[in-house]
Image 1 (cartoon, chains in turn green, yellow, brown, cyan):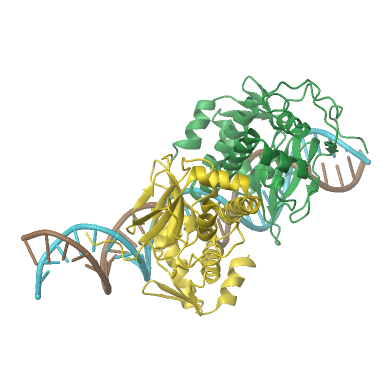
Image 2 (image 1 turned 90 degrees about the vertical axis):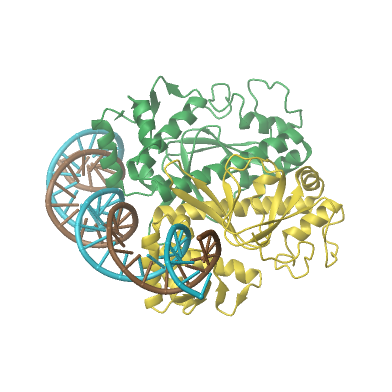
Length: 249
Length: 249
DNA sequence: CGTGAGCTTGACTTGTTTCAACCAACGTGG
DNA sequence: CCACGTTGGTTGAAACAAGTCAAGCTCACG
């Protein structure tokens, strides 16, 4: 089998997750330096594991112990929970630079499974060192507590979407949220973005069936709101999408 | 207007939230004593505010700043978010002994509004003292990080419920979850519990309409699963309810 | 060339909402 | 003390949103 098509693990220079993000901060934190100091371009640190995984693999399962605190460097992944009867709910999509979950800094057992969407490269930070770094460095502590708040906010927003919004509303806001997160990372080319998600990913994320998601997307396409071709998505009418995502109903 | 019908603020002895819980730990933490030490029955601490609120009031609104870290002592409350068009989603029910949200230890602005269901008594812990206590006391730090994990787990479970479960399933598991939380606090009388929730609370919590919730509850009643009379609920057939909450569909 | 994963479309079913009417309990003010 | 408005609950009929089932299509891959 071919190896995943991703960059060499030890070159962080071109990593979109590099600039001003977690991966850098954590590396620095573990080395023990002050948070604010500049970091060299290649911030490879001893004792930080590098890993790669193929697309469509489950890296960790619900309840499994995760040895190191994982950060996504390249590719897309998702956290999900599965029910005994096959129903699934995707809780979050993980993009380059994302910590899988801040909870994993403090506990090793994962509450949900993590699966790759594309080929993925990720790094594992040693938990103990990270914990003591968090305890000792007030700024890192503040960062982590902010990430905690964000994580809860994300989960709550998902609950609102699923509980109180219609299908089109949910799908539109998912797409917009993803485009914003990609934009923050400098991963948008104008209004166009890489879009490796299959319809079943969207369905599992917004709590609908694949068929219905397909219908809604076809509707969006017909209305000239977006174009999806060849694993890439273009927002033809972001304002229109935004209108659907928010003020609808 | 009459004052809320609740116990005197400074008697914590009879408080169901007292034993082995947060309120006690936090009081102790602020005083600076070691976590494991025994606490006197009346653990009133200087600089901890006591408050009361009437039923059906909004105590804090989304985005408002909350001066002190609030813990519920008596009564039921809920955290919720409202949308511009009137739709609401309840994110969690707060029972005696619950911290409104662990996020509030680190930031003062609330992401969701907090409203009372019954008359409520709550205490406000000074944020700064609490923060330094968390930083200094490893056991308190561990407690808070555990609470953090629990909070995210709760939010994720809600998302799964709303995204992937049917109406009966959601309502049954809400009722069971509440009964378990009350049991932990010694607030169940056999299979009977205080149940101050209106149908609209349940509806907003499980993402359904009031009418539909009413129908499902009537169904449960007809099937002999539970009885609701006079603001109290009896689980006539907990096993049956549990079956509906989990293995259905 | 065959196979399987992913997408599209249509017909039909089910679950949930909406609208509406009605009832009971309760608190309030005249 | 009664009349009345309000809040909460129940029920039924009709409208609508989403799910299910099924068929066919493309494309990548071995």
